[in-house]
Every structure is written in C-alpha cells, then in structure tokens.
Length: 566
Image (cartoon, rainbow, N blue to C red; front, top):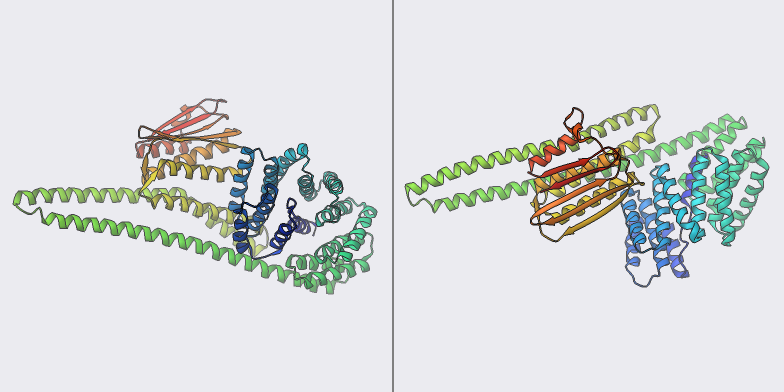
C-alpha cells in the first residue's frame, strides 16, 4: 500500500509556483486538472509563443507542458525538451530555469522508473536552489528525495527530508497548500513506519480535520487510508474498518481509479486483520478484477499503438522503394528511346549495344551490392533488436502466466521496441535521401548523442562545428558514417569513464571531418587487431567500404580520439 500511495502523492505535487498573474495561475490550474493532454499541449505552446509572459511565467507554463508530456508517457520528448531548456538556461545564466528543469528531469526519471537518475537530477536542482534560496523548489526536491528514502526503508533520512520540506513551506507561508499537506502526511507515514504511533496519530488527525473542512476529497481519502494502518497497529480494528470504508466510498464517488484500487486493497486488509475473511475476500476479488481489466486495457493499447507505428514506417519504406524502382525503370526506358536515334549505321548500333550491355551489367552489380549492404545493415542493427524484443515478449508471456516479474518485463519490452523503432527511423531517414549535406548529417548525429546521453546524466556533451564549405554524402556514405559514430559514442559512454564527450564537425576543401573525443581510460590500439574487438574492426570495415579515412588515437589513461574524413 505504501509504495502505491507514495507514487500517487508524488503525482499530485503542484508546481505552478512561479505564476504571479492570478488569471494565468487559474489557467494553469485548469490545465493541470484537464485530461485532454494533446489539445492542452497545443494551447500551452501557443501561450509560450506569446511575448507577453515574464521569465517566471514562462517557466510556469513550461512546467505544465512537461507535465502533459509525462501524462502521455512521451518520455523521450519530455527529456529532450527539458535537456534543451537546461542548456539554454545555463547559457543565459538563468539559474531559476536551470534548477526547475533539473527537478522536472528528475521527476520524469522517477516515473520511468529510474530512481538513481531521479535522485541525481534532484540533487543537481538542490545544489543550485540552496545558495539562491529558491525555497519552493527546495521544498519539492526535499520531499521527492524523502519519498525515495522512504521507499528504500531509510526512515531516518526520509524523516530528515520531510521535516526540511515542512520548515521551508512554513517559511514561505505555504501551510494551507496541498503541497504542504503532502509533506506533513508523509512525515506522519514515516513515524508510522518507525512505530512512533502517537506522533503519527496526532498528525493524521490534524490532516483529516483540515481536509474535511476544505472538502478536499482526494486528500481526505488518502489520509484516511494511511491513518488506518496506525489504528491496526493499535488493535483498533473496528475504527480502521469504518475509515477505510469511508475512503473507498469517497474514491468511488470521485471516480479515481488508482484511489479505488488502493482503497479496496486497504479495506480488504483491515477486514482480514479483524478476522472477517469472507467479506475481505469479496473486496480483494473486486480489486483483482479492476487491476486485471486496467492492465489488459493498457497493454492492448500499447501493443496496438506500437503495431500502428511500425506498420506506418514499413509502408512508408515500401513506398519509397517502389518510387526508386519506378525512377530506375523510367531511366531505362528513356535510355532505350534515345538509343533509337543512334541507329544511323551499323557501327553506331554496335557501339551502342556494347555500351548498353556494359551499363546493364554494371547496374545489376550495383543493385546487388546495394541489396547486400542494406540486408547486412538491417541484420546487424534491426535483426538483433528484433530478436531481443521477441525474447522479451516471450518472457513476458511466461511471467504473465506465473504472475511474476511482469512490470520488469514490460519495461524491457518497451525499451527494446523504442530502440528498434528509433533505429528504423534513422535508417529510413538516411535511405530516403539521395544526398545528405554534411551539416544535416552532423545535426542528426548531435540529436542522437543527446538522446543516448540521457542514460548517462554524468557525461556532458560538448559540440563544436564549422561548416564553411559545402559537402554532400550519398545515402550509403551517410549510413556507414552514422553507424561508425554510433559505435564510437557507445564505446566511449560504456567503457571510457569520461565526464566529457566532444563532438566536432567541419568541412573544408570538399572534405567532411568528424571527431569524437573523450578524456577517459583509453586503450592500447594494438588490441584492435586481436580477437574479440569486433566493434572497432567493424568500424574500420565500414569506413573502407565508402573510402573514408578512420584514425584512432588512444593510450591508457589518456582518452580516445576517433577522426573520420570523407
């Protein structure tokens, strides 16, 4: 119960702290309550395009926009948006915006969930907020770190952070807000977990009285459920049953699905502890049916959405291939029609025939080579990911039948499917273009690096570019160079241990140069020729296939620099 309720509480922490305009505050509060998330995102973006917002009001609107992305579970879009705003705020020395978006990134990682990353970003927010006395942000980050500590059963640390959050709220005269109520309630829950029942009961009674007076149904239901745990420990089972029954009635009335599930679970537990097993069974059965219905609905929707996206991408790819084949057929017909005009004499006809045969053979060889290259690339990148996705789905099916490890397997399936679709999008983007400019290629590479480094928050990306001269790559060159760069970035993040990753791109005298550099452990370049170092050898093979220069400079503890020229 505790874990489910803590997540529920964390979702309800309001962050419209910066809006000074009362009308804007009302608008943002309405957006937060709305469930029309996609329409809300369009409206919020229009608000941000207005020049009438102050700096703090802009942050408030952006915060609600991030919440909408979180509600839609569009984690990549959410993280990319927040990371871009952090970079902009740092460049503008806007510490309030930088701290705010660090907090929002932490919240996103909490929902994914990646709790270690969440704590890391919340602590980054605290580092900026403390010296600048951004007390509202501090109170929320203290609260969030307290929640993680509670979930890890470190109750003393959780108590410390909840008290910090409460003290800051008092300094801000924010004791009447929902946020303060959450701090206070979780402190009481911590005392309950530490078996300090008298302290916990005093706080719960105070919160219940205030929420009744304020007619705050959601918080009243949550408070009643938490308080019943204290009553059970005090052997006051009849009172606990009455309160959990009241909480269940409130949750049903306001149609709060998560609240109904939690209330059913708690009420069934209270009845069982009072040895009323028959009635407890009925409530537990209702809870299981509700959870099963919701789980099946969510899973089917996610599978349908993934299939729709994949089929759309597959259809787009087939259409592009058909278009390319049609163009080639048209070119062949035009060549044959032009050849009719060359038939003025036997000599001209003979020369044309020889030339036509030679061109046809060369075209067939090129087409075969292109098919083999495309097949190899799809096998190397998509084949392995499809196999992993298939294994994860099979494992999910087994665990679903056993009812164990379902959440973990679902997360792996989502992660693998997301990676698979992203690899397919990148491959299609390159194949769709007959020519790719060096500048467009480098922009795509920087976008990939930003997305990849979301899993490595301690690594900072530095980008330097100078495209003073034009340079174009064909689709094969672009695809092979992109795979080389992906391998280099992956190796650096996984094995180098560097805090900085540099990307450099420039053009000069019709030469495009890419440099990927880190300052980590380095390695002995002689190892490249030995067995087991297939990644580096594949990079060399890809470079050779498009006549690109690949230079690797590395030494133990001196970092690694990989330079590609084409």
